[in-house]
Image (cartoon, one colour):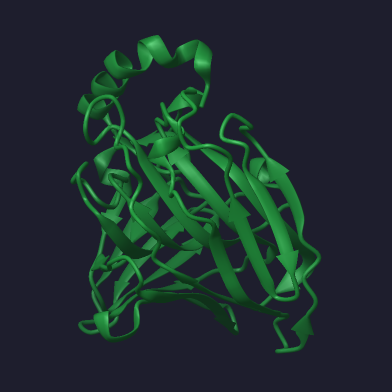
Length: 285
């Protein structure tokens, strides 16, 4: 949603896709840094890099640090989030429903994408974090989903401080499906779950000596030209639950940050529910 760049976006978008893969965090990743996995895998993260473990066969693959290239902002950006900060978080769970699909995929079909998720990071804001755990509901392309015309998909993501991105099994979901995103810590191991009920669960195991301190509800967009590329209806993220590493309930203190005002995003909080809404859909940004 960076208007000054829009006239150059189409040309640069396709040039970027040819050289690297865009991820929803706004960076270009070499293909060797993106790991699209199915089940039976866990990731061990250290300062020296990651180890990818097949939990069924025991096979271990050592992965060195992997640099991701900083990207100009119009490719991908958080549009709005609300965050709750705590000294240590050991669990987060959120329910939401797959909304009506956006009316637009961009001036070139497949150019625009949108991502809805709850997530955990370290640091005090998104800009100084070193990792993110996130069950992501996406519409369109991402580094984990290469089809630019993909419909709604639910996937467990983990982006590490070593510059690598791990994608769980991709689950096809439809408007009206009920979802739950969960991140649960046991010892030094996190389990990230994108749970679509009878349609399946996408999950990751992640082991590392890092603390999650920031809980997010986020709407993110990639190459958004028009507010019709965002979900038309209000988005209800309900029954948000947080606890610390000992299982003690945490009281969320949500603080909203709006990164792009063009589509008039707003967040309201009532009890454990968070609702994201928009202004008129016919705004061109």
